Length: 81
Image (cartoon, rainbow, N blue to C red; front, side):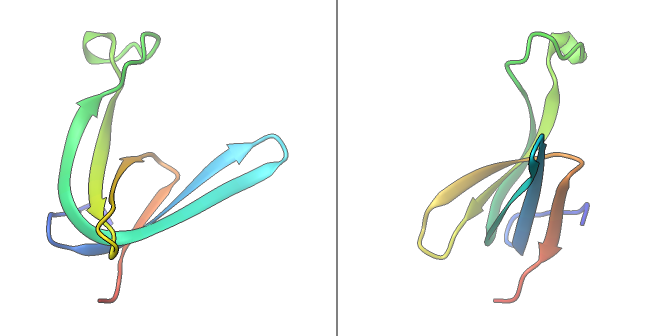
């Protein structure tokens, strides 16, 4: 899902590849905001020597706010209400 917009209910699943296997995590909620922001990475060699990532802020059902950095290994799908 490439068009994530505020107000949508989505499920985000991220996979981190490590030496002994993969670690996955899933979070579901309503999109509060979507923006591109730079990381603090000094070795990224991107615009102004920063790596720019797409970040999605979600509000979970219990009210908790979660900020997720979208990477190529991130799956974003619509979620039921």
